Amino acid sequence: MFGRMTGPWVTRAVFPMWLCLLAVCRSIPTLHDRDKLMTLEQFEFTGGNLLSTEKEIRVNDILMKIKREEVAEGMETGKFPPAMHFFRAKQLIEQSRVFDILRKMPKGAALHLHDYALLNAEWLVKNATYLPNCYICFGAAGGTRFHFSLRSPQKTPAKCSQWALLEKYRRQLKNITEFDNSLYRNLTLVTENPEEAYPSQNVIWGRFEDSFKAASDLISYAPVFKTYFYEALREFLRDNVLYIEFRALLHPVYELNGTLHDKEWSILAYQEVTTQFQRDYPDFMGAKVIFSVPRKINNSEMKTAMYEAMKLHTKFPETIVGFDMVGQEDAGHPLWYFKNELLIPTEAGVSLPFFFHAGETDFEGTSVDENVLDALLLNTSRIGHGYSINKHPTARRISREFNVPLEVCPISNQVLLLVTDLRNHPAAGLMADGHPMVISADDPAMFGARGLSYDFYEAFMGIGGLKAELTTLKQLALSSIKYSAMSVEMKEESIKLWLRKWDEFLDKVLNMSMWDEL
Image 1 (tube, rainbow, N blue to C red):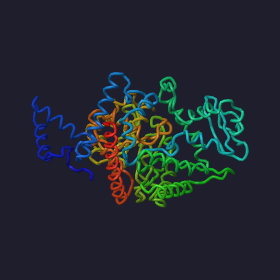
Image 2 (cartoon, one colour):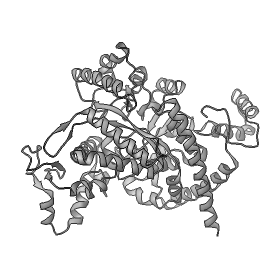
Image 3 (cartoon, one colour):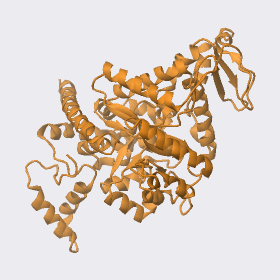
Image 4 (spheres, rainbow, N blue to C red):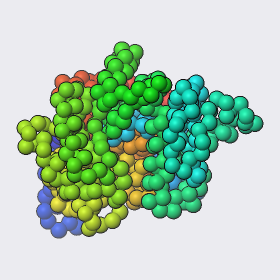
């Protein structure tokens, strides 16, 4: 299935053509070689060497006709969603026919996600905050914190008002809808004026962390924890995502009486919910956890974390599939700072896969910027973001030659101020070169997105441009299964399921087109 030397030309002999193109590249090309060079570029593009069936060609014709129309409209009106901030573009994206098609597409797996930003924040507001015994306090800067308790919590977070029972507080309000909308805004980064609200990366990361803390207060309450995860799986499946992997800090989960559950309780809860979800929805292939720690911890704490990660991976190998560090990369320790601790599994003879965030920075030449190369030296299985890899040709070459993919998260990179116009995302050059990558959503709940379709839209329309066709989408979906932490057997089963879903998707697009023509 993977690495086949085939092309999107059904009636042509691909190998002779490929050799012919190579011959052109080995000599100085002339004007007469333009068509061959254009074909070669398309062949090297992500998905350019995949074989297309007659049905796929028909669907591609439909998709690309709509895509060209929407790109032309964006050029004419000046409102091209990938060139706009996602908070302003979201409504336009939802009106797009391309987006409608992408939502129907089986996207394979989402491999870069975080535990407390999986499910849309509206669910938390409408469900978790309406449960009995939910207390709230308001921060001086406008944020909120929550806690479930039989009585008013004794400890109040710094710079927060006194705790108020939310049920009682709501009864005193004249406009509950507006209040709930404010809670939603505090649980996300969504705002009408992002440039004014977030003038720098440090400002938005501070707000980002505050929102995570607020969400964590709600989700880490035991009666919410399992239901939240189940609903998150349903939201991804509804978006035609068949499998997920997510980074989890495995914070203590608490009961109403103050009892705290440990990491193993959370892991067993994730297993239980996933098993039940698969019984309810047999087409869902599963969910796995990448145990993570904050990258601001010290060496001693990292040493403890490594032994804990090894223990959890050994005890729950089907659920805990690896290790990572999370948090703002520029503000945390670089990977090389932890090199001795990160070598502990190897020295102990324990196989603990790494899935390192690396290169999520605009700064070049710093110790943090070097994380991209250090991640590869430490044998990472995938590179989270890898935004700066184009500045590191050696790292880029190693990543390509040893098939270490980037987890590209377009919306996250834009909202967190790495890039303004997604047409200028570094992954554009990587996609043109067929570099191994997958598309993921990072923290969709924080960005007001749902599932994976919004990020696929940004990648397909903005990063890939008009060269990205149906075969690009197909390759990205297949790559997400290939580069997952699933077993070989599970990957084979997932590919079979995905191919069936893909064929159904093609029929849906063709049927949509038939209705348009009537």
